Amino acid sequence: MSCLSTLLYVDSETKNNAFLINKIPIETTQNTVMQTYIIDSLQRAYQLADVVVAHNKDFDQPLILNSDWAGFWEKPWLCTYKDFELFPDAYPGKRDLISLAQFYGVGVNISHRAINDCLLLAEVFNRVPNLQEQFRIAQLPIIEAICSKSDEVLKEQGFKWNYDQQGWFKKDKQESFDFPVIRNSKIRHIFRAFVSYDERQIAKDWGFTWNSERKAWERLLSPEAIDLMPFPVVQLEKDSIDKSLATTKSAN
Image (cartoon, rainbow, N blue to C red):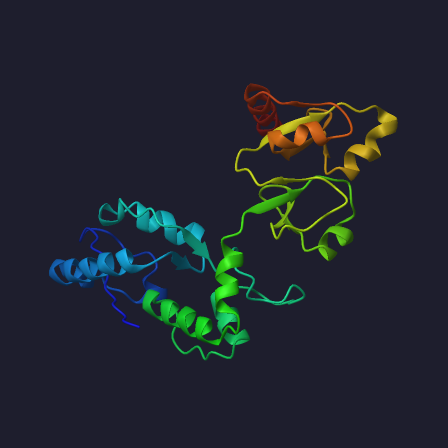
């Protein structure tokens, strides 16, 4: 394994608001000759790679792809935090990189440096007993459960609740379930359930929550899920959502 490390150029007038943590003076980012050498080496390494791996892809991927030198990076990115299954399902602790390293018995003596994070991750991979299988799992598509099952039932079948998307998700391992599943979609909208007062518990069981401002049962859904609901639902227009938010802010 080869390792290269550099600091990317930033304007000399830029203030390092994280200096107390990373201890990096702005002056050390001005060595453009070294940066050019490192980036050229990184591009060559990228050409030989099958995938790009990061522990927090949501942070690292846009940071890299927004750089001029990575404009043509189109290979898959995998996230050891979300895509891999490096912790047992019942693991109760944190799942950050340091916790991951400690779980696999890797010592941590330096943090807040990108190169050290990469070395930690590489050593974790050295200790994963079924690494090829983990890479296969990491690239499986995600499915979402569409049902009124209890949290415990879904957890027992490996689904995990995603607070941002408001749904139960897991890797598609070609399993059979007694409820519908759909492919995960990044397109999600707020939908309103048309249920009577006596049916309010049904809406709640299907993940809808009561919006007191709009006096309706609502939840975030993939459009593919609406035909699987046991009651009629309708997508809310963005204008009505914005007006409700404006009313709420005015009241506050």
